[in-house]
Each structure stands twice: as structure tokens, then as C-alpha cells.
Amino acid sequence: MGVEEWLVSAVMSMYTGAKTVVRTVYGNSNGSEVKVGMHQGSVLSPLLFVMVMEALSREFRVALPWELLYADDLVVTAETEEDLIKRLNERKDFVENRGMRVNMKKPTL
Image 1 (spheres, rainbow, N blue to C red):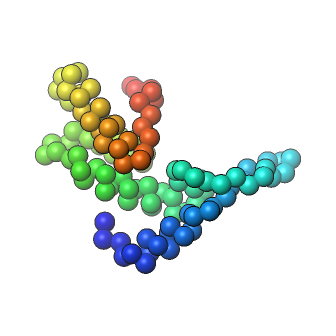
Image 2 (tube, helix red, strand yellow):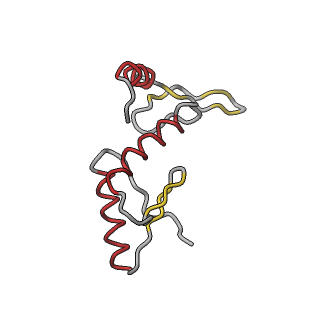
């Protein structure tokens, strides 16, 4: 993505050993280490997520707009159901092989 190494190192150091707490009207929970995913509430999280999705989506783009990305959702279109299932499984395998998880059980329209 063309991000300089010093900036990558700075962001990585911000995420290393990070802890989170849950705030309620009854007080805060004990801190727990964030080991996976994006930090909820961090101003950097949306930018980092978009950068990762952009880098990943470059790998599986085709000439026609068969994939539409919006926030953390991916819409895949196809001419047949068989082709759609094939495309979805390819995308799922692709991102899971790079350490991400895919929720295939979200409701569809």
C-alpha cells in the first residue's frame, strides 16, 4: 500500500499489548488484552480496516464489478447460483488464508 515502514512500526507498537475495558454505570471491568481484530472506538481502526480490505480486494478483482465493498461488507454477484457459490468460497478461502474470519451467516435481502 506504500506506507512507510516507520509508520507501520508505530501503529504496530500502539496495538502491541493493548488492553480494553468495558465501562458501565456500575464501574469498569478489569482490563483484558486485545489479541485479534480492530480496537473498538479507536480512531485508527476504520482507516486500518479500509486499508487491509483495499489490499485484499486488489487480489481478487475482475474486469466487471462482481464485488462491491462497503464498510465491512462484501457483495458478490454472479450470473448463476453455482458461480456465486464458487466466488463466495474463493473469497472466503482467500481472506481466511490471510488470518481474517468471514461470517457467511449474515442475513441477505
